[in-house]
Length: 291
Image (cartoon, rainbow, N blue to C red; front, top):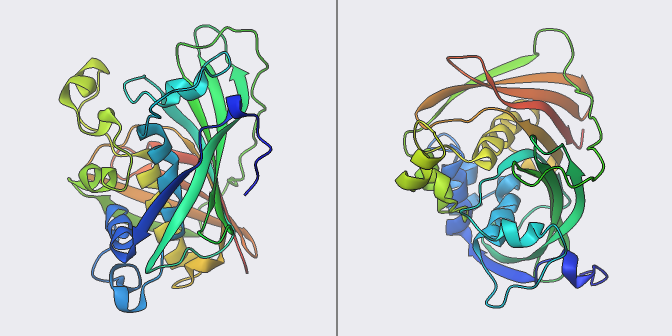
């Protein structure tokens, strides 16, 4: 594992151990059920690739005993405070090799890559990266997240680069309907993301929300599972990359609709919509796999 990152730009290395129960819990948390024994039955278990995102927010929720004086702005210190108001801006997941299904470990750390200034009234975007290694030091996956901190803009930094959408101006090639269960947020938080906005009533009221929200990465896990079933069924190891911009708050007990556009062999665009309102939950989606 690389050790060339300056210590003021990275959290300490952490190790998270898991068993098949954690893999199945994650599958249930992103909507898998009886019809998908490949994700829910340990006898011939496969791992949904986005199980590899679970270390990302575990980093947020484990505060070091002696926090380091991070460089200004103290973005990593902020990320270690669940009560700090922030929202995911976009997320990119790279899958390098299959995650072992029955048991294993993730070794990872959070590295600050870029800070982008959107102006005093629009906040700051912090782009960070978590590489996840197995117990033998093999790179399993890479998580890249842009997080919006609404109150930290106006520091004179560079603007974030513009990203063009892959979604074409035509009807989707595949449309998949699903439902977010009433307890989906309660299940998903057991995978490691215990941010208060998903459970704590006082925090939810203070943020002016209608109720607890479903995790953005839970929605991304739904996309991974549903898209795999459409594009390369029962072969999740073929996934190479997922990217999505987070757009709209998703509440439990909601219908969702995944739209997929096939662009080329091994390449697709997607959008995840609310099934009733039609609003985009995840937009400008990009998906790549081994053809």
